Each structure stands twice: as C-alpha cells, then as structure tokens.
Amino acid sequence: MSEPVSSEDGSAFNAEHTPFEAIGGETGVRALVDAFYDRMDTEVVARTIRAMHPPDLTASRDKLFWFLCGWLGGPQHFVERFGHPRLRMRHAPFAIDQPARDAWMVCMQGAMDACGVEGALRTFLNTRFDDLATFMINRPSSASAD
Image 1: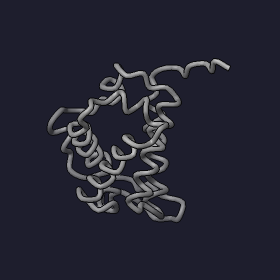
Image 2 (image 1 turned 90 degrees about the vertical axis):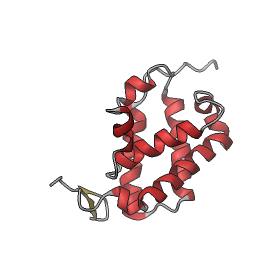
Image 3 (image 1 turned 180 degrees about the vertical axis):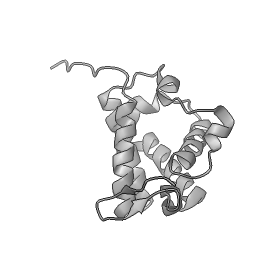
Image 4 (image 1 turned 45 degrees about the vertical axis):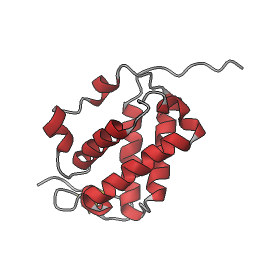
C-alpha cells in the first residue's frame, strides 16, 4: 500500500484514492490535455513552447494523455507503448529554460481552470505540476538584453 500524499485540507491521495480518479478518469485527463494544448495554441506567452511541437498536435496530445493517465495513478498507457517515460532524456533536444517552464505552467494552470479542477486535487496538482515543470529545465535562462 502506498503512503498517502496529504493536501492542505487534510485529504490524501494514495493507491486507493488516486488523482486519476479524482479528475474523472480518462475523460477528465483527456479534457485537461485538450484544454492544455488549446491554451498553448492561443497564449502569447506560449509561443516558444508551441514552436517546440509539430504543427499537428494530435500525437503530442495523445502522448501527454497517455503519460498523465499513469502519472496520476491510472492506467500505464505511456509505459505500455514506450517504456519508462525518461522525461528529461526525451525533452533534451528542446531548450527548456525558466521562461519555457513558466509558459508551460501558464498553459496547465489555464487548463485546470477550464476543467474546474479545484480543492484538494488542485492543491495537489499545483505542487506536482510545478515540481515536474521545474525538473524539466535543461538550459539556463537567457540574460535580458536591457
């Protein structure tokens, strides 16, 4: 049995009560992923990270959906298809600096807003996504030209 991860309001997520279930299973994860990529297409701040993706986001949407299902405690679709996620290795070709990380978070925060993610689940995901986005930084930020 896994240890629970407590949120600020005292609720906990563990193997018996997963964030995957709390978000609404595959339907909820798909909605979050679609809202995320919709934001990436429309947020000015996300231009740099949008340029890291192919013009057609279908495969990107599927890969994030598969990854998040497992990452949130649901089916391990990504692992079944590709093996261990090895996120830093898979993202190494892309220059991910603090502004890119922040743009990713703007898109994810907007997606959670659009999907009505609130309460204990929002608190939990805010922390987890923040940690994940920071972990992905692989380049120093460029100095300002001012």
